[in-house]
Length: 51
Image 1 (cartoon, rainbow, N blue to C red):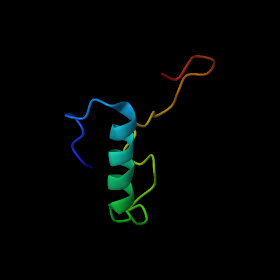
Image 2: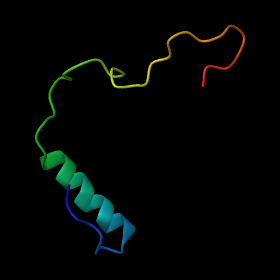
Image 3: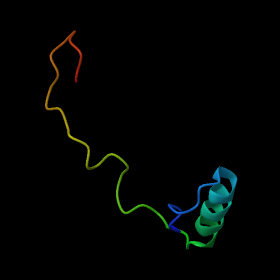
Image 4: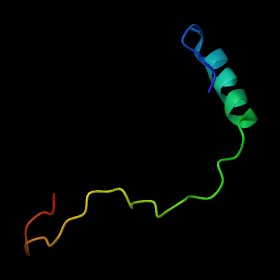
């Protein structure tokens, strides 16, 4: 992403960021499941909040 720290005008900053995002190459499909690195809970006790 373009470095927009020096741009103070909000609209101009948005324009530059959008252009940079559009020019960036596509990310492609995910390697694994979305939540695979999430901390897993072994077994939650019944009736209590899980986290």
